[in-house]
Length: 163
Ligand code: SAM
Image 1 (cartoon, rainbow, N blue to C red):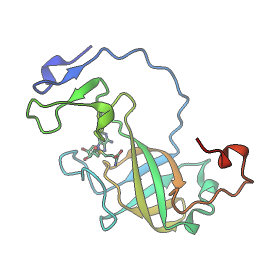
Image 2: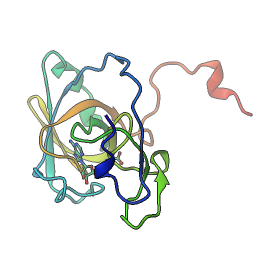
Image 3: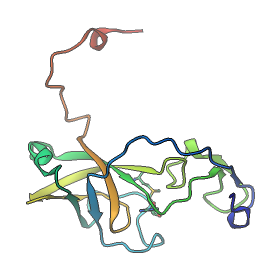
Image 4: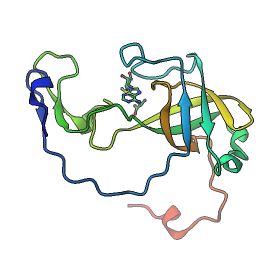
C-alpha cells in the first residue's frame, strides 16, 4: 500500500509492481560504525573509518586476488529503504527530482555502490574505507575498480567496435 502520509510536499509514490525474483544471493554483510541513517555519511569518503566486508561461506575463496587492487567497487542492498517513491524532494522544499536522477537510497531496487580503498584482508574479511551504509547492510558483490582493471581474457570483436 502506498504510504502517502509519509511523503514530503511534491513527492510521488507508486504502487510497486509485484517483485520478480532476480535470484540475488547475499555474499556477506558490511560492518560499519553507523547504526542510524541520520548519522551515516551521504557518500563515503576515502579517509573515512575502516569498514569490514565480511564474506560468508561458500564465497570466501572468491577473495583470492582482491589484494592486487587498491580500489574496489562494492555493491550493497540498502535493506531499510522504501522503494515506491519516484519523485523525491531531497531538500524537503517542494522541489522534486526523478529517482533516476538521484543517488538516494530510496529506489525500486535499493542497490548502493561505492568505490572504496582497500586497507587489507583479515581471514574472511576485506577491510576498506569509503562506505556510507548502516552496520549489517547485506553485501551483493565486489569488483575491482574499472579504472584499475584490464580484462584478463582475450578481447572480443565488440572491444574494437566504434559508432
Ligand atoms: N554510495 C551509495 C550510492 O551512491 O549508491 C549509497 C548512497 S546513499 C545516499 C547513502 C545513504 O543511504 C546513507 O546516508 C543512509 O541514509 C542510507 N542508508 C545506508 N545504509 C542503509 C540501509 N542499509 N538501508 C537503507 N538506507 C541506508
